Structures are given as structure tokens and as C-alpha cells.
Length: 468
Image (tube, rainbow, N blue to C red; front, side, top):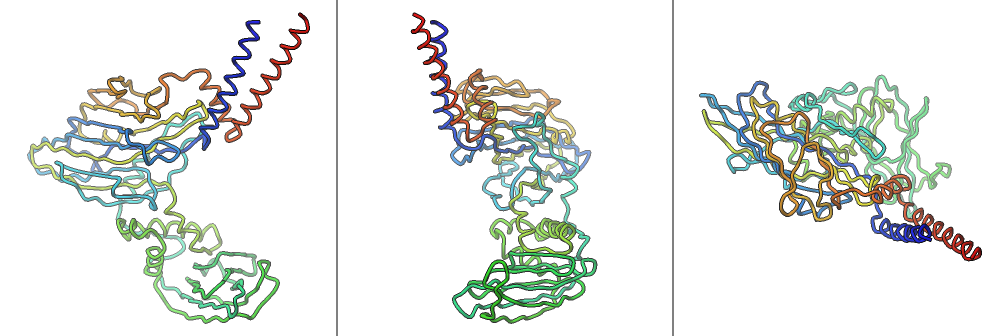
């Protein structure tokens, strides 16, 4: 009978647990990215770090989206021990997107005075971890990061920045209310010609011909930019998507111009991207990002590309590096601070409630001549007030604030995980296992398991009563 009672209790817990899973519907894994210390660009800098106060503040998490967003502040006490004035160029790399980067998210000061900075755009960051990977260790490639701090223009394999091409501007106008599928056919040799189109959303290619098309509901302006040998355009229009019902219920005019590649390309980027954010990025950086993407697509796609192929670059997570300069008088000390937003990796495949993991890369600080006294403080959010795992031992104090004091830099980078409860129970792990395996279907699986157990219990109970 005791076993029967335990089974009933377990069944109730399973059904109750399924309700809990319903309340936590949403993604089971959401990628976060590491934060990083500032570093000196110049090798063998004489500047020393006497103290760093590193604060992770998650107390205001109002803007979170599937994961936790916090503010990291790294405040350094830096010393110039030399008898000479030192003008030190520093770099702060972080992961972000060009379409969402905001200067309001970052504050850099020296002696409490705000510092201006330049933004250098690095490579796309591939997803470094997911719920199925066992090894989630991450790090920036700082050699590559430093290499990307350049004002040189990207040198493409398929075009030159000063190369001139022929721009076809096509004005299309349906003559009735019926939409038309406007089609341009042409052929070209990929070795001698490169074609960049704007306004078309259909592309077909075979060894003999290239076909591009777009639906026109009203007057449209389309562009075809040709580098190298010219092409011959053949125009037609259809009323169906299969391009079988041809129509002449449209008019078109074609104008041509000889234009230089780089001005044309840059003008297009600035007109069709987030102007308010791109205004903070130099033309060199913009050209390098989008020019590299176009170059890659020309190579992959037999010398053809459309605006859709490279404009999506602003949506990718990539390493962005802020470069700023701090002046140190001789034998002086100065407070330098960097404050910014960071996001953690949300993982609900291991537990019922989400685990929020954060990585902070400390090894850039090794670039300084000397580093002493690292003080760490973590202010957790209300929804995950406990640190259940950390690479550095953190002591819990009042108001669940965690701290650590180290005389020097640790051998490994900092990583820690926040959770809703102080310990992870077996029930947490069981729920997380099911959530990781079944994802959005977990609530239904839990209810089915619970109902199955209840059914078995009822049947056993009836058999037990029959035997009596």
C-alpha cells in the first residue's frame, strides 16, 4: 500500500510538473556570446593595471528576450610608471550586430571624461555552442581581431574599387491594374563579366542563359550593374509565376550610365541600410564588410549577385571592436572604465528553469605590463538569483550578491551560471532532459506520462481490491 501511495504522489507531481512546463513554453536554447576585457593594441606597453573592479549587474532585466541581459562595467586603475607621456591605443572587442548596435549601450571614460572611439568591424561569429555540444569553451581570436583594426580597403578577387562598369536603369510600368512578372534574359561569361542586380527577386541560370524577374504591381525602377564585358538584355513580361502566359500590357525604358564601382556600391549601402547606426561606422569599414560579402557571392554564384546576397550582412553576429586612445602623463595614475550590455546563453535542456551562462574573457588583460587586484561582483536578477556554477570561486553575501577578490589574473577565463534555485534537484534534471528531447512537445509528453501512470495506478488499485 505504501508503494501505491508513493506512485499516486509521483503521478500528481508529474501532472503538476507538466503545468510548470506549459508556463515555461518558448525556446529551450538561446545563444549568448562572451564579453571581454579591454586590451592594449601596442605590444610591450609600459602601462600597468593596479586594480580592476569587474561588475556584472543583472538587477534591471526589463529588456530581456528569451535570455538575460545585463550590464558589465570594467573599471581599471592604470599607471604610467615612466618619465614620458604615453598615448595608449586600446581596444574593446565584443559581439554585436550592425543593425542593432547602439552607442547608448556602451560608455567609455577616462578620468570620468567620456572618450570617443572608432568602430572596426570583424568577422562573423559562428554559433560556438548549442544544447547538444559538450564543449562550449569559447574565445576570441585576438590576433585576427587586431588584424581587422585597419583603415585599408578590402581587396576583392572579382572587382576593384576604382573599376568602372555599365549601369542599366530600367523603368517599368504596367499599363493596366493587372500585375506583370517582368523578365530580363541575358548570357555572359563568368570569367570576363560580373553582374550585380537591384530590385529583382527571381534568378535562374543554366549554361546558356541567365533569367532574372520580379513582380511589378505599379511603376518600378530596376538596376543591372555590369563589370567587364557588356551583356545583351532581352525583355519580356508574363502574367503568371510559371512564365508561360506572356503579355504586352507594360512599358519600359532603359537608360545607361558609366559609373565607378565603389561610389555606386557605397551609395546603395547607405540608402538601403540602417543609416542612423551606419553613420557611426567609417566608409572603409562599411565597404570592407559588404564588399567582402559581394566578392564571396560572385565567386560562389558564377559571377552573379543581387542586393539580397550582401545586405543581410548587417543581421549577423560578428566581432565589433571599439578603438580609443587614453593619454597618460608621466608617472601618473588614471581611472579608465568600459561599460556595456551583455547577454547570456539560455539553456533549458538540462533543468526545468533556464540556466543562464555567461563567459568573460580575461586573457586580453595579459597584454598589459603588469596586472594586480581583480575584484569581481555579480548582482543576479530576480528570476535567477543563484550562481550554481563558476570557474572562479564566488562568495555569496548580502542580497545574494556574489564577490571574489584575486591578487592577480586567474589562469582561466571567467564563466558562471545563474539559476532560479540554489541547487539543481533530480526533478529539475528530469524535466530538463525531457524538455531538451521533446522541446515544444514536452507539455504533451508530460501529460501523457502522467495520465499513463494514473491509469496504471487505477488498474493496479482495482486488482488489489479484487484480490481482497
